[in-house]
Amino acid sequence: MTLQDDIKNNAEGYGVTPGGGNSDFFAFEKGENKIRILNRPANVLATHFFGKGQAAYVCVGLDNNCPYHEGEKAPKDDYGNVKKPSLKLVSYVIDRKDGKVKLAELPLSIGYAIQDLMNSEDYSFDEFPAPYDITVTYDPDNKDPKAIYRSLPSPKLIPLTEEESASFNEAMSKMSPEAYIEKRKEKAMPSVEATDDNLQALREQHQAEQKQEGEINPSDIPF
Image (cartoon, rainbow, N blue to C red; front, top):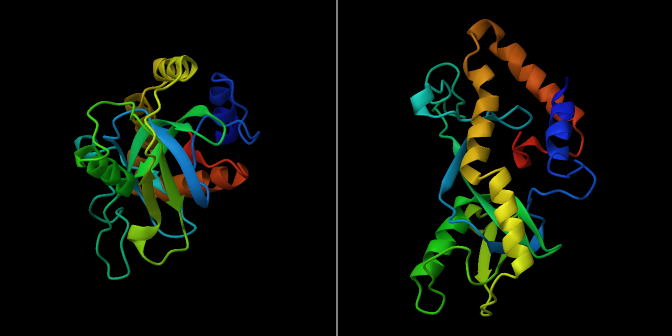
C-alpha cells in the first residue's frame, strides 16, 4: 500500500477526500487568512529539513534518541554545522473562509503573537478558545523571516456558535493535537531506526511517495 492509499484510507474515516477541496486540515494561503484559535497553541511539532528537494522528517525527540540532532545523519548548513529542527505549534482553528474546524500547524511567530495579545491591555484573555478571530497575512516572498506571518486581532468579541463548539468537540474526540503529534512521530520511527546501509533507500522511497501524492502535502495530514 502506498502512502497515498494510506492517507486516503485514514482521511476517509473523517469524511474527507484528499485533494477534493474538502480538507479538514488547515493550510495558510498567500494573503489574508482569518482564523479563530481554539486550543492553547503550546503543543510543539519539530521537523528536520535536509535541504530543498529532499524529504523532511518529523523529530521523534531526544527521549527516543533521534539521530538527526548530531552525528553523520544530522542535516548540516552550508558551513557544516548541525541544523536545529524547525518548530510548529499544533492547534485546532476555525477557518473563516469556509467556517470549518481544522487542525493546523502554526509557526512560532503566531504563538508569540497570541501570547502578546493575551498580555495586552486591550486584547487580553485567559482561556481558549480565543474570544475573537485573528487575521494572519501570509507573505512567503518576504525576505524578512519575521514578516512572513503578520497577525492582526479582530476588535469584535464573538462567542462560538453551538455548531462551532460541537464541531470542535467532535474533532478533539477523534484526534487531539497531542495525538496528532504522536501519530506523526510514530510514522517517523522507521527512518530513525534505520541503519546507515538502508537509510538513504528509505529517504528515496519517502521522497518518491511524496511526489506520487501530487497536490497532497503530508505535512498537513496527521497520518
